[in-house]
Amino acid sequence: MRGIVFVISLWLLVACSNDIEPTRGGDVSIAYLWSMATAQSVDIKDDYTIRGYVVANDKYDEIASSFVVADATAGIVVEVDSRDVNSLIPLFSEVAIRCSGLSMSRYGRRIVLGINGDGDYMVSRIPETEIYNRITVDSTTYHDVEPLRRRAGEITENDMLRYVRIDDVRAIDCGALWTDMDTLTGQRLTTVRHFTDGEDTLSVVTDGQCYYADHPLPTGHVTLAGIIDWHDGAIALRITNRGIILQK
Image (cartoon, rainbow, N blue to C red):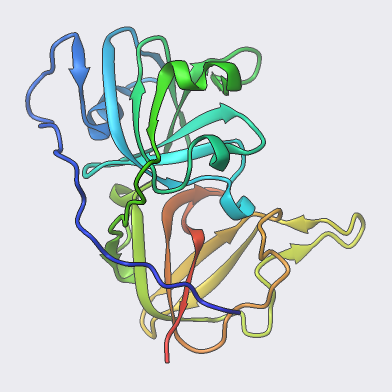
């Protein structure tokens, strides 16, 4: 498997203070939205705006019908009703999201942003026709977004949905592909594989529809870059932008 190289640069965001109650409108940090999610589902009535960079989307089919935006304080999943999110909201583009009229919900340890849900869904996807009414996208300049550096044993729930890189790990499941296959349907299944830095174990979840779902796990030591996600009741890294860098 070929690795990719990403360039590290500084975040170009000014984090809003989490210690001061904002007014009924204006910019707030994503961490502040998290502090508002005190119930299973919360409607946002105030005219708040969050700003950040898109650190995960459906490019390479690593996640579906959603994207993750992060600022210097936290990250959040945004549900959108599109089969090609990356063409509308490119990976690593800078976005501003007007939150008034949207809803938040907790799914496991994740916070999800969308429209008010119906039926069994507490939050539904933002219709494609409304995306640009609610989300301003600056995709005119490519941004080299800096991932946080973590070791496998340092990751906690405080890193949920943040963009990180973990250096010098190797696959434990030697000889396996990134995902398993359902022998009855022939479909690739979302699968957790395990890596180690020699001391601690890192769980890595890969969507069954991912571009490299049927590729073999890398051999030797690698750097992995992606978001910290919540899958099947546990913390796992979800690689974004094929963030798999082979180390010599």
